[in-house]
Image (cartoon, rainbow, N blue to C red; front, top):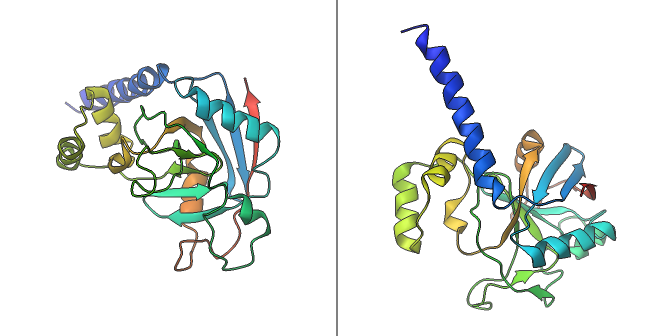
Length: 223
């Protein structure tokens, strides 16, 4: 038995890696962007299945729009949000999150919110029933591992049918399934999860803004 367990673990890890690759294959894009922060860098692959959001993000990155903007909203175990143009010149403690409103993209909701998912921020359903995306602000899911009972409850409440692969990834890698069907996910992190964790651990004020500025610089590193 003791000799079989290491082999089983190796096979399980290979199986999970294959799930990640095959699950992401239908969404894989040609572009990889790198987000540089004081805690390190994060690399994310943009999806071809969300052409409006991907092209918009690529255009903003190429114009250096995000350079100097902040991760202005950080909720541990949930997500980190950034891209508000007003954050470039924000005073300490200033509440952020309204920048970029009014310039929206039609939603392209089709992917799930695994850990490291790159998604577009938006206004709530009461003001935005079509679930259009803010064209500037984005968030990256930190999330947490979930139980099958929780995932089944989300699926039943929202009428979502998860594939076996998606269930396995949520149970082993984590994410935030409560957001599924509500926001456009247009990319997925491939490197830098330790950086994501460090940003998520930053002390914040009552508005979830980090007490020290976490600025970013984004560039396209692969097309």
